[in-house]
Image 1 (cartoon, rainbow, N blue to C red):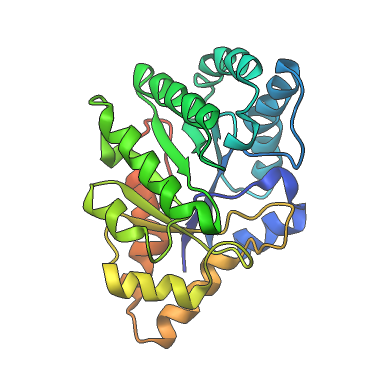
Image 2 (image 1 turned 180 degrees about the vertical axis):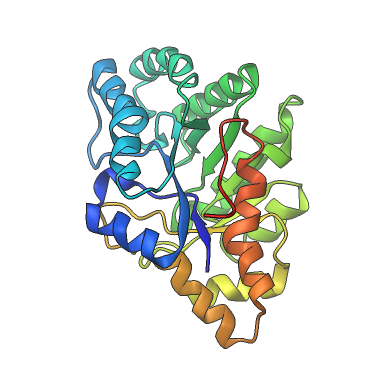
Length: 270
């Protein structure tokens, strides 16, 4: 089996996780910028983190022969300080030139506040200006439907945004169909507490089909599983889905989306 991990926060994982992922068939891992568990207090703190994503972590992954790609952004949890956010967004373009950076992400909303919306809109403007792919975080639990609706409205209001170059991540049963109907890609996140489980993920695939959908673990420093994606393949097979169906969701779909960035390449013969 082969698969892509399109959303994993590897800076918070051990080298054993890299080895396990490669052993399970992972062909590439993509790491969006995220919240560190605390609010960073300076532009220099963000700069150091972006260097970690674009310099150190790819080198660590390479020791296990696993290509590592990154996304650059300021997480919505850190969007309330507009002055700091403005200064951080000003340094993002320099990192978009790095060879492993695929686009802007993960951006979006957390509590659906005005400041979060402003910073989200500014991120989208940067992505459009620099012709970047976009990876969007949708809020957790009770804020998800409202936040997803706001996000879709903002993206659709920008005539320069191509839905086919945007992945709306952390979709659930009550948001996935609208995301797909509007032409965006949908990411189903396999995370134990606040997102989806393998049975729920496969339910969504059976209801909505397997076009323009990927699975990811969003593994981080919380209770999460870097092998959640290949483990979900077992649930698909239990239900009688073919190897071709599994390969489309776990591998070909993320490759198709990510290959819209000229920086993404993968050795299919590996």
